Length: 442
Ligand SMILES: Cc1cc2nc3c(=O)[nH]c(=O)nc-3n(C[C@H](O)[C@H](O)[C@H](O)COP(=O)(O)OP(=O)(O)OC[C@H]3O[C@@H](n4cnc5c(N)ncnc54)[C@H](O)[C@@H]3O)c2cc1C
Image 1: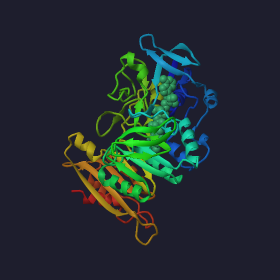
Image 2: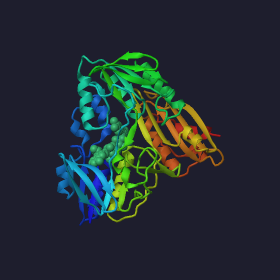
Image 3: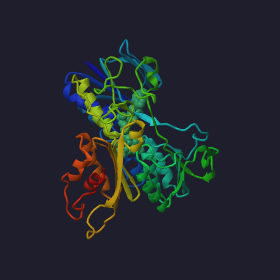
Image 4: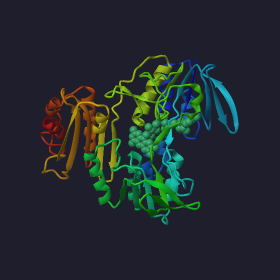
């Protein structure tokens, strides 16, 4: 059996490693367009912010290590077409092309930055942040002491992490966001208002409800023009979302979501025979929404990648579902979210209620006591938890994992109020903030 995998990062390499262990006699070939494999892009903002210096820390395994396990990885090989009838792909390499046959195929081509349709993007000093090369280029620019004015466009997870990195590097940072608040798709306003205060207090110029119309400069960026003003800039980082790398499948008839992500079932199977997919190029089952959604996260790419690896080897595993659990650090604050936000519950037409509380992270006589904010979203009649958001200072974000378990197990707000969370004065209060939130919910 010949297993072919397109894309050699989180999803693709997780699948290859798992399939290798289970399908002992199969040939396994991975085609990767870039020269880097097994790369964790999540480290990029921290690399740029000088949390660590060696970019090699972000690439877990080499081509040689996979070869030693019996997985053939071909870097610099871009797959440009797929013929589902003959079960062949077309591969481009060094100006030549050839075709290859598969018995089972996994598409793990991930996503790339969705650049906004504005002039001036193709200039020196304008960056995206996705690949290793992007991180190296941005870090080199940041190190150039002559470049002091930075503009970040877009305030999603990556945009906010980049802002933090640039603040750590002593830059004058301006964040421009089209929506009326930061990171609006992941968090509700009761949480984002604190993130906005933190950004402003740490010296970030925050522009909300403002549309970037052009990047200025003649070869090297000098500024940003919006619908409200012109701002000087010598570094611009564009963080306006991602787009699945699935254009090469346009002629295949493969079923895709509106944004182009491959629609898969809970086993990771696409609508084409013998073709699976996972990661940032594919949909994922949402366990509260009970539908296929698009959530481009490393947690999902790794889990689904491994599961598809088993299925490529003959298993029929089903993914239990994502909650879209995610965490974020913005300067001195941490925020976590899981399940449905209020905005999502509204969009789904659910009869829901919410509770928002502010408490202290631990007992007052232990040092470092600070505020912690919790928002719960729950079903109005059954009181079953649907979603949660948390914001606070160091350590606060880990409580989101307890909420993820609670939502998965169908816990109600009453049960949360009495859940047996651990207590000692440096860690929490006798009634943990999650107990309090559960008890306050009506
Ligand atoms: C800056 C940044 C920070 C992040 N932080 C977090 C975080 O904190 N937590 C979290 O959960 N997630 C985070 N993510 C998201 C996470 O990195 C992605 O979800 C994950 O990388 C997806 O893995 P993937 O294998 O699906 O796709 P990718 O990592 O995109 O890899 C796909 C690979 O396929 C290759 N490819 C594409 N097209 C072709 C083709 N036609 N032929 C051959 N090869 C092809 C590409 O070159 C690429 O190497 C972050 C992402 C970024 C960019």
